[in-house]
Length: 330
Image (cartoon, rainbow, N blue to C red):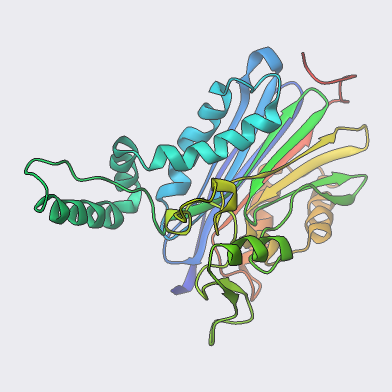
């Protein structure tokens, strides 16, 4: 459901360190609830001088996006391979979030974030089942079945940009004013995604009366996300093989002297602007010495004013302040 009048209040933050300056702004827009979340940690790991940026685009409620914004960067830093193999660490951490959210401990937290109906539905199901086994069995929480979030995280370490993406958020680099896309928009219509989905016994099609977007079983329009555990329960298949998978694509890009900034945003932005249009928009303001937080807010105001701007919106700008070092941090 959409609101007749958008909620245009913006949650804006900014910060900087020696190498980077950033701003992030989020707007509820025409949606009934704000389901996006985000996290920035400029000093995630002092030893490797790693900065972290994450955008979590929730669906089915805000619980999973809020949970990821609180925990994912911490779990990533704790991963044994984080310092020596960040690509594999990102892949493991994305998958680990699903495992964590299926626990009773996470169930209580997710309930507080808004996943209460699923939590109590699971509890009632297990209580009914317990009547036929033995008294006193504790109800189980099976995790967020239809609540999830597409997720994009960016690490900046040394002269490397490392982008992990599961879903349709996007990271775009401005290099001399030209847009360099550093992630894939994962949709059920992509051939590789469709093949994986159909291998689980599900179908991909455009449902009647819901526009021209292909959806899994006519319902959900994304093919990679954290959460959505109802689409990840086919026995005999790995987490990477399920209809919706949290397994991320991870790309690395060397920072050059021509690189100006990154745009990290949910699909609510990319529904309204192409990658190049967004880069041109930001550069227009930067050339007038406008601050990053003002640019983020101007971009949101533009997107909510166009017909396609009906979604929650979150945008991050990360500007490179100094030339890149000679190589990756040790």
